[in-house]
Amino acid sequence: MDSAAPREPGATEPPARARPRLVFRTQLAHGSPTGRIEGFTNVRELYAKIAEAFGIAPTEILFCTLNSHKVDMQKLLGGQIGLEDFIFAHVRGETKEVEVTKTEDALGLTITDNGAGYAFIKRIKEGSIINRIEAVCVGDSIEAINDHSIVGCRHYEVAKMLRELPKSQPFTLRLVQPRRAFDMIGQRSRSSKCPVEAKVSSGRETLRLRAGGAATVEEAPSDVEAAAARRVDDLLESYMGIRDPELAAAVVETARSSAGAQAFARGLDAVLGEFAFPDEFVVEVWAAIGDARDGCG
Image (tube, rainbow, N blue to C red; front, side):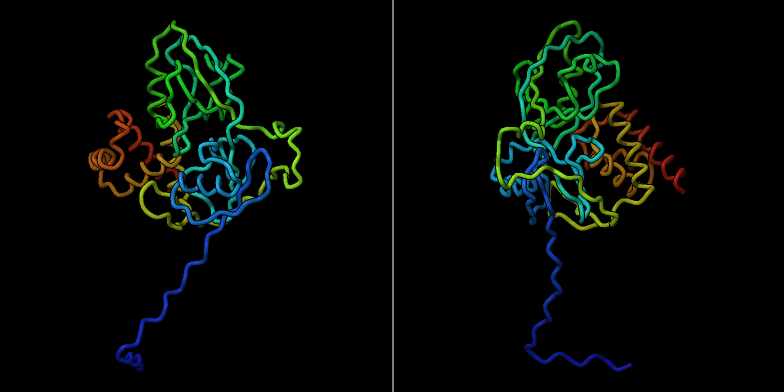
């Protein structure tokens, strides 16, 4: 085989092949023209780009869904976006206050957050205290508890505050619901369009958003990883009253690089120590991840 010709002295390296620009389509969920955004590496930057595209403040955005303008918690944007996904931003609508009396230990709420300072209701348990209050809906952002602002708090902190409220003592929740399409009645604009359902991509590549560092294009999780993350998410809800697919995926990643249960526990403390997971949760998660591997094997 002929060897490569020697490089001339002073010759420069050939330019690296540029990665194609990643441009995502976006709309406001209640109706807007289609915008295009790029150049973000985490959720806060994503919200800033969407806000810039539509001339609103980033703090107006409560959460985003992928490929659906509906308040559909199954389509909630987490830490990964398919390269063909269409992003719908749900913005602040009406503010409401409700009074709740905690007659049971559990209110029946599952909390998540948008990664940018707002915690909101992801699930309401059938027959629970909150389920009996018609004004409270899935998708409502919790802005304050007893006039104490919780903006900027993580989901697990809000869930803990609600768990620790005393029984038989009324408290108030200040909620902000997402703006609905019917809110636009009477607000005529030639450029305004009704939101549409976007085609869901069948591709396997996703943009992985990170709290620190640059976003990366990665393969979508394998079936085993996805099943394990779903089981971890269920345990997060059971133990902590939160759902967070991205946190669940981070737990699965930690397990994948751990040689055993004790190494896994140490890894969780090192990477996700702020959550202060109870020991019994860690044991159940390790077992659930193992079951998921066996079930998909």
